[in-house]
Length: 505
Image (cartoon, rainbow, N blue to C red; front, side, top):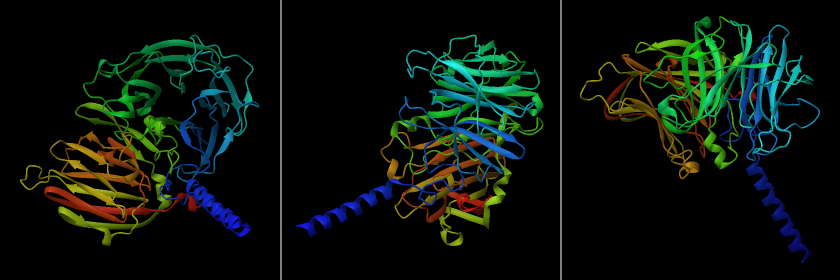
């Protein structure tokens, strides 16, 4: 009997170890982000601030928790190149665990101090809106904080769902706070972050009244000639889920005005880029830099986002551009990715009919990597020009990620329908599309591929799509496709990338 009991105990111990091993995660785990910031210790939530000072980028973010009543800590990670990040440290704003609902951190360039404006609920009650702003200061890049005893004087009733952003307006010499209140953008100003004044508000466009506005961010571009207003949204056009709409206009320190447009403009057409944060501390003549939460508000319905637990997009610069006599934004991934580039392979003059398997010609597995495709599109009226074309990634579990262009419907698409983990999950299932701005004779598509995400840049960054996927194993087959015709690929470049967690700064 004792031997039987001993055997059962050993079997139970082995089983528990297997379960624990299955639930645990490290930077080598399948699907874990290899070139995007994430954490193996906690769920990475929305960014709070991105600050550049003395050659170092400081990224603050809050932990994501399913329990809405739980206190969500703030974390800080730093980097020299926005590619390699140090392990995050929890930030303590005071000696007690405050119920901080939302927070924003700003850099005072005159003193080099950081200030945290925190929305605090003392009662931990989401229903009573008994909230207030609290101010803290740090003189060591956010490592430690000291409470400011002065009460923050705010002219409006604070609500628990406020998600404020604060920007130092160098042109008009004051702090600008933007917040969503009753589904309008409200602008406030302050000279010292302590006493605030209401300036103006911006109403929704009629065609988007059904959208839920979550957050607003304002900043200048083009040396202050133009201003951009980002609106993070939920249940948005052109798809359900999360997205960021942008408006380009003018700002006089009080009012933001943008011309009425028949077209809506989106920072990202994929499902997985929201809560973008603009970098502070850069030179006024430098193009703005943003980083976003590579996630979707809808995914909170299905719990922790293992295997990647939440991560950030590739940092992107913002430039002014034009299309159809209208100002638009163009986004480019940071150039410092050179630090993780590895082998490079180029294939030229490929003729694609139906399906062309290139697996034997490239390095497998294909992730992580940067892939650039140049399709010859000068003969769109040719009878044999395909109805759709692109690139397809497959693994030994018959899962597929399909990226391409539909010539009839004139849109780009990313199809992640064929993944076992998400086949019956409405938050993931389906194909996402974005309308085409393409009018050139060569269509250039750049893909930043990670083990569980893809970022697509087209039209010199005028259009971007970011999507997560949950593969059972790495892709081991790559093919080009052309439906109902023939397409020529002038140039296909695959540059493999090194795992950032295996390198030291």
